[in-house]
Image (cartoon, rainbow over all chains, first blue to last red; front, side):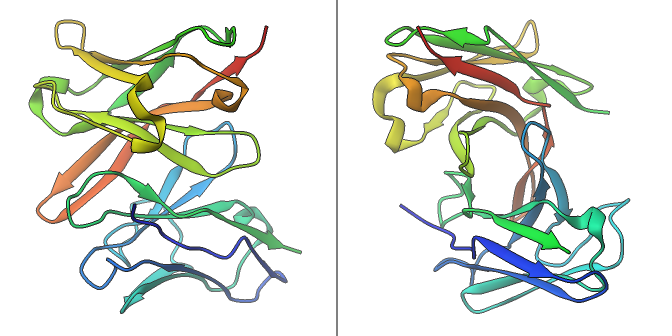
Length: 108
Length: 121
């Protein structure tokens, strides 16, 4: 089955740049999406189609995709950005819905 | 505004069947898109359970085998999940979501708030 791989945790100090990676074999041909999540709450889409921000998402959130890796970048991370972040994509068939294992971002 | 709301029992006994419903408002399920269930077990990540189209086409996570059944009630604008023979490993927050598609871009855009289901005797 198709898998997306993320680091379990990333830690930065406030104001620093946080980078969260997501690797997957189908990423050269498939968009990556990023969700911000706190357990027990609905996940929030922070980036779609690799680097597009939904309305209401701060400009410090950006993304890129190259080869088999997608990256979520938070430039000037703030304490309120402390969430679990999940990448999402699909394989060639479009189903199943595939989530990365999640990355816990600590801003401390 | 599209809204999804999960409902169902918060406690299920081992070996019994878990049944959840997702009521959709602000959008007709019959208008298209796939509708799915995702769960998060304690200490783990998001896991896709399965998805359904309004015509009844379904895709299920193979890791859950034949325990899953999903259905759609177009008249009530809702879709449902049943998971049979549950064990403690099925304890999780269960989310429903809509998978929006535009061309080659498909992703879950609207989610419910989630409902906690505990499997325990």
